[in-house]
Amino acid sequence: MKNEPEYIKKAAEVVPSERQLLWQELEFYAFVHFGINTFTDSEWGSGGESPELFDPKKLNARQWAKIIKAAGMKAMILTCKHHDGFCLWPSEYTEHSVKNSPWKNGKGDVVKEAAEACRAEGLKFGIYLSPWDRHELTYGTEDYNVYFKNQLRELLTKYGDIFCVWLDGACGEGKNGRRQEYDWNGYVSLIRFIQPNAVISICGPDVRWCGNESGVCRRSEWSVVPYYYSQYELLNAREDDKKPPKKIDMMTLDMGGRSVVKKGYRMIWYPAEVDVSLRKGWFYHEREDHELKLLSKLVDIWFNSVGANASLLLNLSPNKDGLVCERDMEALLSLGAQLEIEFGEDLAQDSEMTCSGCLDGGYEASNVLLPDKDKYWHSGTGDEKPWIMIDLGDGYDINKVVLCEHIKTGQQIEGFTLYGEFDGKWKKLSEGTVIGHKRICRFEEVRVRRMKLVIEKTRCFASIESFQAY
Ligand code: FUL
Image (cartoon, rainbow, N blue to C red; front, top):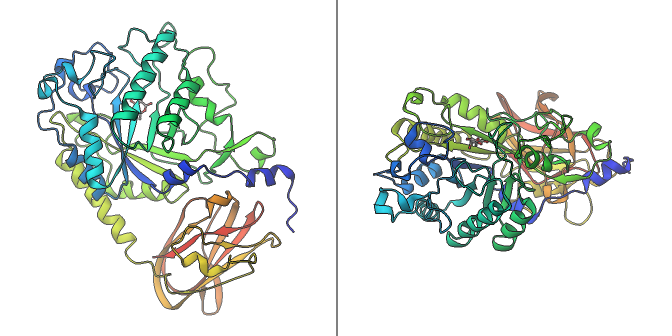
């Protein structure tokens, strides 16, 4: 029996909610930054822009959705209202919206078009609603909370299923700016009540910001982290002396390792999301037409997030016409094509699996080859270094192994080594720390028949839900 301290056992018992599990499956989805900034060529609008400026004559949300799908993404999150307060839907609660724009004679609704396009393409749809609002006069008073909840209610009731509500922690009011006491609990209750399956990201309890906007996550991206991280952005969004204490740092490298768990904090399931833009900025600017990320960079970002126990939120910036321009489209389609090539055929499918041992009652090693998410290998709790071995039946050229932990039973694995057998000797192919929802091990292509995954360190037991080889 593994003899671990109580704090480790407790951390190992933390599991995701049903909505987090559903979200986790998406892995790769799109942000769409579109709004008044698209027409003023800015990133942060002042709130003083005239709705008359908004006129995306060729707007085609179906084009966005088709590109998103072809790039391999599973959902779209639209900036329904950015910091400038301009609403992409005809909100009842403000005049600052599409209803006072020349686009479709004020009869248009971008949120509706985007939500419908997503459904037509089989994508999930999510909303970004900026808490910080530079236009709304009630901002800074209790009335703003009423306003914000009214808007949330509109968005959560009129556009079908919403998979995510993305609440941004940014605020640029500065020292002498307006201060808003946000009713976070009220927002959460409302969202839970209307759309219980929606995750609330960033300023919310379900999905954590990875800490940067450059597309990198940690070597050990723990999904189980101290509760206080879920409060960081809430405090940050106020922009005043109640800013988060310096010692809470969203950029810290170790968010959930043993040295953190040891301190006895309350731990929660709070997995990471990497948000990054295809372009330099979030909104479209012609001057940035030459600053798109290269395919190799995008592929790296994908592997280093989706393949490192984080999800990837990649941003598209439709232009003034309301279209994703040609070069952005090409970049995204190439990414989709590249991912298809990388994951053409899972060579592990018909293999034979053996292991160091397993828990009785249907937890054998061969489960890792079954698509059923509830079938997995469970090492039992007695083994210090459990292992699982795959025999592909013949030698195959392989450069990637995909590993998934059964996160429904918590995140347990702290370290692993992957070996390949060459002339009867085991050679290291890859090693790593956490596995979590997904870990993709990439290595120089080798011809190999047998591979062995050794779990070097785990909290209570080891579980593997899926083992794939490409
Ligand atoms: C930030 C915002 O200030 C940016 O404009 C953008 O929306 C990004 C995704 O989040 O906090």
